[in-house]
Image (cartoon, rainbow, N blue to C red; front, side):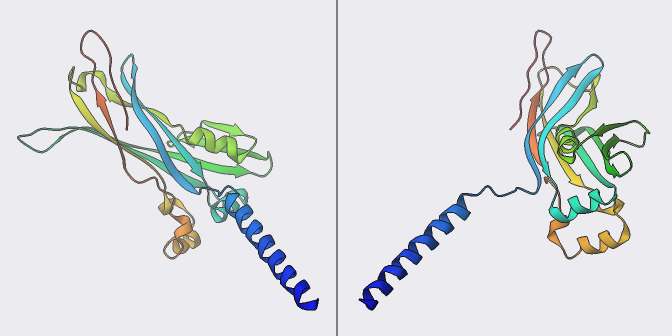
Length: 203
């Protein structure tokens, strides 16, 4: 009788362990870093604006630093080239835009600013600030630089600028991969509209 109870207990324990493992595997895993979704050039009166879509999720160590008042900077890099079979590709545009994210304990607000200007947006939560950071928009190409009907190759990435972190954190980035927050370069294509319509795309 004792042996029978022991066998039943072992089987029950095995079933409970299996159920626990399945539950843990089913839990959503927090994706940390920068994930690229899409990029495009949108028409403006004076030219073309880059509009990109990312998912930005700060690693726990970096989020903790921001909540303690450490300012972090992200850089949006953009390049646009036109292929030429007879020579090197023509570089039509190349620019970078810096975004600064910090937290003010007195107002309990997260602030996001671009460039070196004093203008910024305030947000009640870090998630709200990251949502705006995830969808950067900036003027990228003057209209006269694109040839109608030509197809161009765009490259874009969003990355944490570790060189703007305080020195102790810069040292930590050398050994801790958690600080590597970078989408890497992502490609998209864009076809300049002819005189009768507009076209463009991303991949």
